[in-house]
Every structure is written in structure tokens, then in C-alpha cells.
Length: 241
Image 1 (cartoon, rainbow, N blue to C red):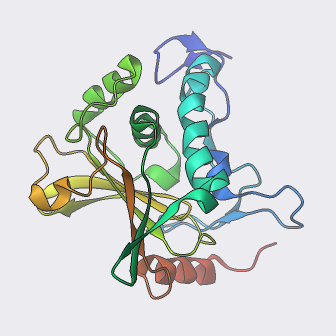
Image 2: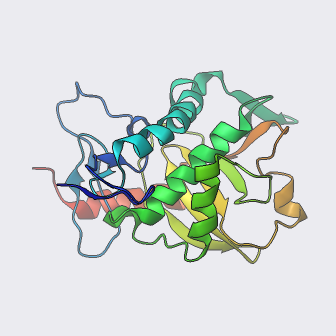
């Protein structure tokens, strides 16, 4: 049965569209037990997710293919190519990760496309993401394939110092008075500014921008609130059956 694609608006047969690309879940088909999703959404229990998290009421195949180019680039940098990412050091302290050059447009559009899919998806994992009127500008950027400048849905990145981490629900928060969505893509943490107001100077210098090197601030996983939250969710999810 045909349904309305939430991106192009056409009536079509919709597919199992991934909001977060499957590669970021690091799913191994040889594993004896499937991966599980432990969620902090009230009333929902842990679920087996052998194919990752997808939405059957989101995209048609042509729209999914449009996003695939950006998804592949994100996975190439942060999943398959993470060992090639440089270590950033200040003095003797490891402060982050980075690359001297990369495709700004592809990577920015990857992050923006994940954000739009999280907003448009009915999956409970993304229940906290509602962009309101800002969704119109975000969607138009994807249609135009226009990543915009540093201020346009500006992106700041962090990376855990451990790749073996789980996946938490994205959420909205305020940083220095501006509204952001925080998204977790495996060990990569993406902050997207969904506020129409510009960055101030303290965020400006760490945000992604055309012609700037790629930089991700290092975040210790051990002792982090995310690790504590994951441990609590797994404990509360009960034994796997």
C-alpha cells in the first residue's frame, strides 16, 4: 500500500528507512544475540534491533537514496575510517580528534539529514525532537543540498575516547542561551544549533565551518553521565529473552 513520503510528499511505497545509519550501531550479523535498544522513554522496554532502528512510515526509496551519499560519507569518516583520524594535543594533553581537510558540505548535510529524519520519525527513540517552524528551513537545505555557512544550523562535535559505547536518545538543550539538539552517533556526539540566533565567540571557534579543519572535542566516557545513563537503562531493561 502506498503512503505519503514525509520528505518529497509523494504517494509511494515506503521502505524501512534508517534514521541513524545502520553502520553506526556496529551490528555484526555473526553475533549470537542481536543488539538491543534500551530506552529512557517511559513505558517502553528494551527491544531486539538486529537491523538497527528504522521507520516504515518515513521515506520512499528515491529519498532514502538521496541521503545515502551523505550517510556513506559519515560512516567512512567515523566508523570505517576512525583509525585514520588525527589526535589533537595541547601541550601533552589529548584534547580532541580532527582532520586537516574534509568535505564540509557532505558531512554537514549528513548531520542535518539525520536531524531531519529524527524530527520526522514516529519512532519512540526520537520522541523528544520537535523542531517546530525551524523544520521548514532545515528541510529546504536538504532539498537544495545547501549546507550553509558556520551559523546555519551550526554544528559542534565531540567524540568519546572509547568507541565501544551504546546509543542514547537525542534530546534538546540550551547551551549559552541557544537551543541545540544533541545527537549520539555511536561514539560521536553532534550538537546542532536549531536556534535562529548566531553563535557567540566561545562556540564560533569550535563549530564546523567551510575551509576550517575538522575538530572534535574529546570527552571521557568513563564517569560520563552518558555511561551512567546507559548502565542504568541496561540494568532496568531486564534480562534478554
